[in-house]
Image (cartoon, rainbow, N blue to C red):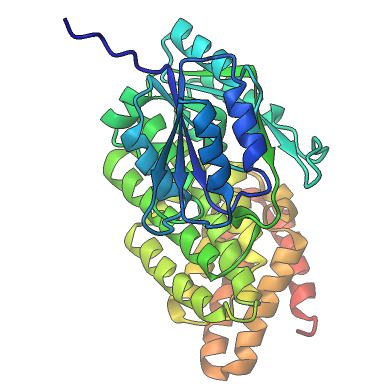
Length: 423
């Protein structure tokens, strides 16, 4: 009679790339887990710095350690996907090789998952600074409270748990059935995995006592800025948009999820455009993004956004970046004129004109007007045409008629004073 095979409760997947300074602590925290029915799948991503030597030494002591070796460096997302293919556990966990977990992290999450028949259970992230001490600048409790509030309000899981993929465990059956995989690039790859798995999940739970210790390594990919950062953000955004277009009905939650991603992408494009060696990539990505936005009717999608997301993530905050995009293509300028118009009409229709300074911000309005004045100087004919469109929008009584002349006059006076300033 064939002996029944015992599968692990949890498969922990750990991509390893140049983690020589931290890999020993990571391994120690894994092997000290109070939950014993676990397998640890280390993915050698060809860092060639001796990190894997530590892993192989540990594997001689603990047979639960398995190693998958990449032929070449393929990045953390693609490495995790290879780990998913090899995993046999009932649940999956993802740990970065420079992080650690509390000894009862897996036990608490797994026990809650089994008790409540949950597809996903997330724990709490504890941030550590460069010296390995708990950071006073970050407190993850707000995120857990946000998730709990969202669960109570019946919000979709992807809208409330959209970061910290490493702080949770996921049903392997769910991951396989939903074909949830990480993006195969170096940054933002986790969002693609999260939206797919959470879109199909039936039950999400929170375990506040399960601690994941996140080491803030300033030299890591997520803390560096390069041409790769700009392109990776774009790849992530594009795949998110494609998935949402094909599988989900856009509503306020979907729009609230997507718009901060647009904000992050625009921020990196703006930073790239004032960084030596990155201007070409920034312009190329922005041109593609403008095309994607126009063909996806994303402005219509944004109309679903909540007031806070609409103004902060897309309209209000990003207006301040206009002067440093350095791009004056017709589609780019007209896109932002349309964005300002929509934001103003939204403010009007929701009787929020009294808070107009909060919607646009003094610096945003100031820099936007300076931007159009700069265009006027560079190209007198075309510049005057676009500046006229923009100023006409700001001065338009029709935009403000629902809320009375007094508010309109105050705003126009403010814009007029700024427009008189030298660029």
